[in-house]
Length: 322
Ligand code: FES
Image (cartoon, rainbow, N blue to C red; front, side):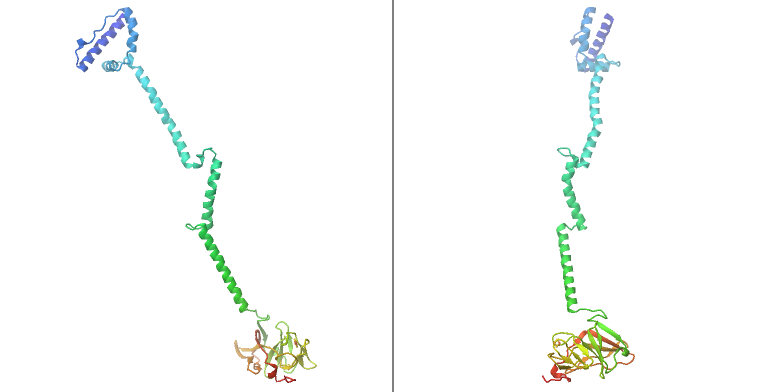
């Protein structure tokens, strides 16, 4: 034990010398190493180790002696703990970064109550409104108010067009061929009754068709008095109204009765080669019939064009002076 203490004293002495050289002081000013006994060495050895943490002697001893000094060995261990502590947060850092990333990517998870469903419900109306706005408009840059304005404008325009079309059709009705108000294509001259025989009634066209020396005529079936349907009386060879007794000859001229005028007539057209060669015309004091058709001609009655009968005073067939 005494040898160990002496060796330790030698090292202390060398350390003092080296320190004096570094500090530039006289080594004699330092306290000489004490000559300790075996008992003192046993008592003083621990305090020496306890004094090892003093920085300067320990550092000098570490540099002077290649072998590790006893008092310097604990130092790395003491410094290793902070390193381990510093590493530990580094290992935990990815977890925090991941949490921050998840927080940024899913803001709904950052709620005071931590309820994702509640956050989604609060966000949903805003998102739904934005989606509806974009969906309803279907165009970027058009909001809901503008879309509704356009819709109302379109509806009003369509309503105006429909009203105009209905008014036009009411004022200028168009009838199909073969229906009252339209044209009746009777065919060639063989479709006409022979001259001097009874007239033929056409209930669909509401006219009596007769043939005379002047040409064919189509008499409107309605009485010119109050609108009754008069009849052909073969026995009297004239038309008679059952309502008030007005009478007309076979060409529609007024004979007698309360009717104010002769019978109305529809326009009769003689068509050859697609062109009208003759037709019923208003001659002023009377209504002229079209010319007799040729065998190639086509007879057309236009029930959309009615010529009003002449006043009874102008009738060549009147029986009672007015
Ligand atoms: Fe024909 Fe009166 S309706 S005479």
